[in-house]
Image (tube, rainbow, N blue to C red; front, side, top):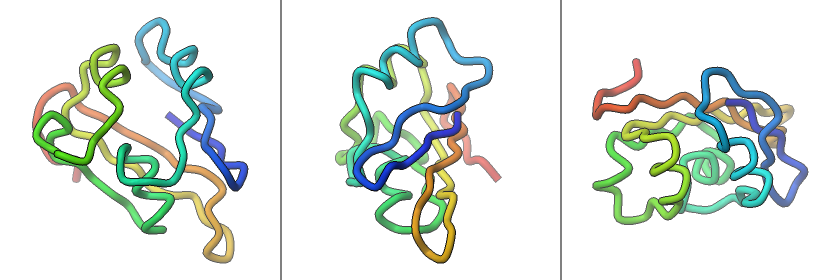
Length: 100
């Protein structure tokens, strides 16, 4: 998935091979910089962030997306220009397995 950041929140801009309803979920639930999502963490950290298992991560707080998509391992990479985030690219796996 690709998210576009407007300085306050991220909204889905493009997706590939996502289940029905996921784009609508992200339209209703914009992602803000913060510890509750992988995208939010990448925006804060300004570097790639991987959560090895969202179900075991005490800070992960987006159960609706996890239930709909069934992901367990998630990676978000910020898209930066001069250190300022423009968005993120996110990948996921439905099993607990690192993304290399």
